[in-house]
Amino acid sequence: ACGGSEPQNASLATAAVEVGTKLAKEQQLVRTLSSAPTGLDPSLITDVSAQRVVDDLFEGLTAFGADGQPGPGVASSWETSENGLIWIFHLRPDARWSNGEPLTAENFVYGWRRTVDPKTAAAYAQAVAPVLNAYEIATGKRPVSDLGVTAVDAHTLRVELSEPAPYLPFLMTNAWMYPLYRPAIERHGDAWTRVGNIVTNGPFRLVENVIGNRIALEKNPAYWDAANVRLTGVDYLILEDRNAQSQRFMADQVQFVDAVQATDLPWLRERLGSEVVIEPYFGTFMIGINDLEGPFRGNRKLRLALSVAIDRDKLAKYVLNGAGFPAYSLMPPLDGYQQQIPDWAKLSTKDRHALARRLYQEAGYSEQKPLRAGHRQWRPGLIAVLRGAVRHVAYRARRRGQHPHAGIQGAVAEQPPAPEHAVSQRVDRRLPRPLHLPAALQDRFRPELRRLFTPRIRRAARSCRCDARSQRTLPHL
Image (cartoon, rainbow, N blue to C red):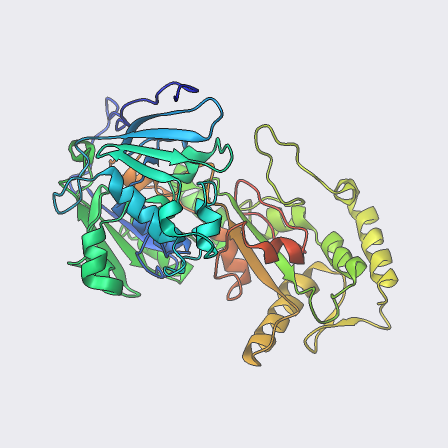
């Protein structure tokens, strides 16, 4: 029997409008995306842009509240067993699909099974790993019917885990754990996410998708909490040029900007004041080293020398204008976790640079014998590493169809400390006007820093000592 925790609150109420505030006449939110979503299939998406749109179209068992914590979504309450292995979710009887059909526990069973099914080839099938038998199913060792999720009845979902996962409510907010409408997928196949075919259960529904240009959503009247959804729609404008995003904002053409030039931050802060908001973001960016071939293979001192040489604090302060934090370990400073910081991070700049030069020499390199990677000379210096050699090496290698010796890599966690989609979906559903800057770091290292990966991708951790921080963090080796 379950009884290890108290049931959660039965509703995720919309934040009340404060006295003295006035809603905009047109409740249509226009925001930007820095890249076109790779798709809108919750089981298959791998990029941040797609996650933002899908989060407005679908809703999982849990959803983020204004405080950045998961609360009731489709599930109005839940409880867990004392050993933490059994979770019982109670679905809202009034939850419906955008076509008016009732949403049931079986829709979650189908969606989760589809994500872990090897035939789906979902890149994030491992996200379902806490659920019993998920790993074995994803690797083809067990049938999908063995997944530890069961529809007890139309509005009760039983989830069995392979081991306790107290973070499960966070995990449930991710697209890969969303319910799916089986008839639409079986009827339309890969085309099920197109306008007119897609059936969703979130606060909005898809009305237009011009690939690479614009995505338009409108309020979903069938959503269980539609009465409290104040926005009538959300328009996503795809603008890879960050200058164009800023210009649109300054011209009052958009109310929510995805990213701006890091070098423009001081000017924007001066002109816009509190409208400039740098939101905490659970993401890491780093220089990834290819330790399987080339000069870095089997040469730890060389990799360490380049990492030690980077002045992260100066990058954060002068290059990123405060849009990032220095990163020295894999994990950020989370509650209940002691960060693992290397001893050299505590050295003075002078001593740290001396250590970097010593390691560089011990690795077999010097001014007379500089490191060469991709026909480029490397020396332990910030400019040479970040703005010269990395970009040059990665670019030349890709053009030749080779594996680069180094390149910019990024990682974004699946359970961020605060949801990026909160403004358009969950805060108070009024029309705000913040200048949102979660991706400011990317601009300094384009075009290499274009794809975002999750911490679960092992090669990022294997190729270097890397870190995550609760905002865009500095790349390092």
